[in-house]
Length: 409
Image (cartoon, rainbow, N blue to C red; front, side, top):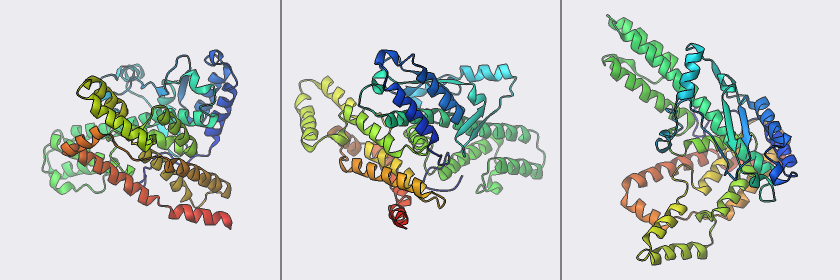
């Protein structure tokens, strides 16, 4: 991985997976709603995903679910799972697999080709989406493919961070064992140096920490590993929005930039999201909350919760769309990009820009008051805004203008 304020995970892929998913959804859109769950095209979706990513995915279109994916009970300590959801996740399946395999489990993540192998191909994952999403004209086949790619991104990155944390744990366990009974400072430095090299912590200074006990040393190594991830990935993987950002990025790097944003636009509009309200609509709802507060505080709290529906696990719509757009700009930096791909990406960027023009960065009055009263919330907002601004600077429109000029040559 490279040090970059932009997240670096999977490489930019050809659009084959995106196109094959879209073509399959095109077939499903011609089927009656009641027949969709059992149609052969549903199993075809699974085969397409398995062929291109190695993921073992079952699609459930039987109920009127909003799109989501079940998190496997492999590792409840995965850093992508935020604390509020951790109590609902277990490690039972992961422990069972370890016991069955005799502690010898092999699974790899290929970031270049966006593919898993080994044990990660055996873990069955279910993606849910209501058949009503597929039928009708609300979502086209490209948008449905983008939605599925986002859900696949959840599972790919979940597996990816298992490999990251397991590697760190194994090295720390080995270090702790090596430190037991170490008699000389030279031997201690050998063990520390080996762990430093294994975790690739080039900036770690061993002179000071060599005087610490082994528990304190482990803490230093863990902290350094977290900081290294922040440096490599461009942001803290323990942020609330991490998993959604990673999943959007997975989708975008398969070429579904504009389709993801247009699908999300329709979902947000269906939720009457603040970013898409007219000035009159926004003011009406905020005044209504104030008027109703003395008479029906429970209703007002419900309205406030609805307007804060994402619970901090997603970026606000404008920031989220800009991050997807930044991925497209990042791809334009590739000196080997073909003229055809450059033209496609530029069209996607133009489509995203058109959507962004119709959006507003609004906050409900309750949010403004909460930020005013809570320093922690203000600091979190400031940090997140700074990170997003840094990303956007790195993906500035000079690359877009340069790509547009290249198309003229």
